[in-house]
Length: 396
Ligand SMILES: Nc1ncnc2c1ncn2[C@@H]1O[C@H](COP(=O)(O)OP(=O)(O)O)[C@@H](O)[C@H]1O
Ligand SMILES: [Mg+2]
Image (cartoon, rainbow, N blue to C red):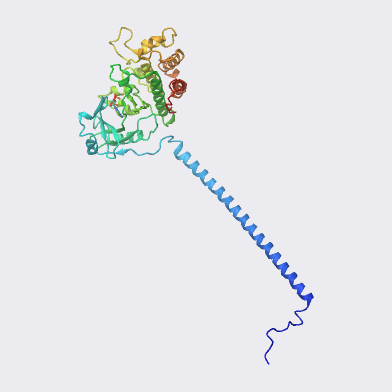
């Protein structure tokens, strides 16, 4: 006989009390398990939260430490002086760049030598200054000095790209400024259109900012020593940059025991105390800035003995007029007629007067000069915008 396909339930399994007890155990176990899983999950979430929190704290702390380290080691002593290396060129490279210093590439001549336009190996156009007193500066001294100058970077300073100190050759490679120097635009030989009042004020402000950077944002301060209109260079939009800062130092060697004339800067720009006693401070540059401001205002060079009697030295002629409301207009370049308000003229005259006063201590800081010029430039550009609808961008 074969067994039935299903065995009948045993009597034990059929006990109703036992079966409900089992169900309770199952329910309890599953509830406890669920609670345990939930608890573990919450524990894990809490653990992750704590970990992230401590990581955040650590990162912040690390950053602060790094910040403090970099602030004390790099930012404070070398403020605004990023360690950007100057490029070193061989003489051959610069010979090639300038077509063997061809006279066709001459941009101008100055107290240090000639300046050539050149095309650098990387395709950039540059102004290459060949120092004529070759071999005068020791190789190491020249490199150190030029390397230092190449670390000064501001939108208001001409960038020094690099230099060459091959054998006896001493050359400096600068960025090229297409509109040349301010001097060329102020002398009224009719070769270039006259600069208008607004442009002159913008140039004054840019140049003031260049000096402000050298005096107040670099530590130790750099005294320009040869600030003048030919050292204010203009880009295609007439934005101005100060050039040749700190260079007079390179030319300050003594010749036969006498300090070379280079130290004394350029006639007409030198502060009286520096000319008389050789005492050089940043206030000497402030004086030179005052002379440049006078040139912008009058369109006249600082010294010209061909001018009518009493007008040969610009500063002496201008001083009494700068503070006299009735005579101040005698100062203004006739080409600027109708382009300025009396209020603006008096403000510019007051700034120039402060800068050229004989007592160095009473001259303002370049920061003060910048602050005084800012409203003049802003006012002008706002009214220009209103009248012409143009939106010439202000560089601040
Ligand atoms: N970076 C430059 N870009 C364009 N022209 C320049 C540049 N540097 C100098 N020049 C021109 O060369 C001339 C001579 O310059 P420089 O040797 O510095 O003598 P200085 O400043 O006494 O005039 C300047 O007046 C200017 O016309
Ligand atoms: Mg120059």
